[in-house]
Length: 131
Image (cartoon, rainbow, N blue to C red):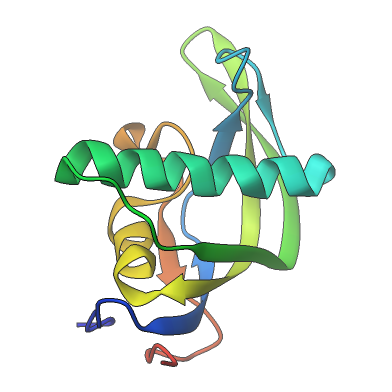
């Protein structure tokens, strides 16, 4: 097990994308964007993660997680059905509650995780979460 979650404990880990992270505009769900608008992009990732948590666990999540771009490998255009999505590849640093970080690792980040986007691997050769 990569993460033994310790509820309520703050932790830090570096994760790299194994599949591009797709993030859509809140007001325009068919429009995707990357971290060129860094604060909005990160805010949207955290919002989507918490929404997914609340839906799957049927409970409100009041803890926080901070996401920072550690290494930007760039935007990747992805042919998807009859359109093109923008996906991002790179490395992220996640800091915050261990349980939510584990959830992000297990379920992915961004939109369309059910279609295989947004999945993560442990980066920087470390298989330990720092708590």
